Image 1 (cartoon, rainbow, N blue to C red):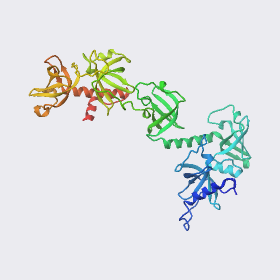
Image 2 (cartoon, rainbow, N blue to C red):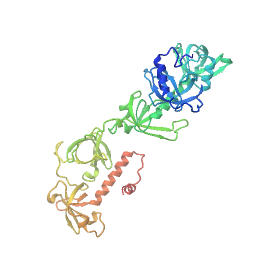
Image 3 (cartoon, rainbow, N blue to C red):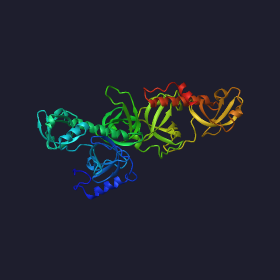
Image 4 (tube, helix red, strand yellow):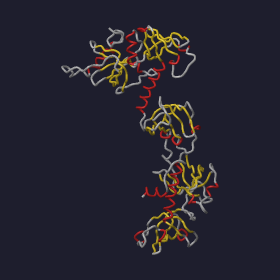
Length: 494
């Protein structure tokens, strides 16, 4: 009886019982049917794991035929099995015993003990295990089950090495490259075996890389635009924007080569190769996706005075950091004069502001300057009306020439202004009592101030909002992004 078969005496009885139990699940109902052609030694197969034992793993080859692998071939460096029921295992048929009714599959040939075994390993492109016994000027002397083999120095590993003395006495997997003179000259390659292992590892890795999957990897390179991560034979990129919720975090401050990170797969897509032989697969990863969202539980009541840090200054305003990963926009239209006062500020400057509005769905916060003298935490009930400011209010009177709007947070004449018909944005000749009845809420822009001379515009407020959204989107998109014209944006919104 062949050593290593499930019925040999060197295996415990529990193994035979396990094998018979596993095979019995497919035996019922097969009597009397025509027997299909079974697997042959040397066949490459993809099999499904159906049962995991201590010493052997049982697999299903074609829905009926079962086989087994030595569990040792499927253990990781920590000694734990790397497969479970339902997983796919790729291997080669090493042994078929019709009389005993078993098929043995292997991921490697093991120690080939004769010429026939070496020839089968070569024909099947199956690794064999050999022990390095010495070194000569051309390469390694290798013992493979009693057969002497030679591994050229160029085939010792994936990288060139001038000193392989540390390999003497150790066993490695090799692929048989050549058999000459009836087995007297056997040439093997460890480099090819390592490439095969890397290819199989890559295949397993790619099967797990789907959007939303959480995987572990090692940082291999850090650049200004992001960090490259090795996921096990395939590389992905964490863009700088996906490192943290906090805007402006430098890649080098957050990561360094060698760091082991847990990341979420954002996207996997095929792209043209950047150069001949380059990867055609682009994998985008995210650290930020696994971090707590700073907007969860955020408390920023509208009308409250807060202090923030200026993070960016742009033509249309200033972005102000209010909490880790949370920014608000102080639009230039909220500032006095020509709306360019913010350009006198510097990044990192502390500024007092009032929370004007919070849009949690879009994660947007609109800010206005805080009135002088108010402490952080105070609530603003009055709105300082300045030319260019965008405010909200309620129609409290309708006339033929326009409507009067009482601005929120104000009382009486000081906060009441006129929106002329031409600035309402309604059709010419429209009945204002129907188009804008008393109680209608309007968002308006301040055109003119002064007691008894407040004048507002609905049209200008809409234009200011759309322009702000367009400029903010363009800013977030980066210098090379194209969002078309403002007219294009308005068409999409309509």
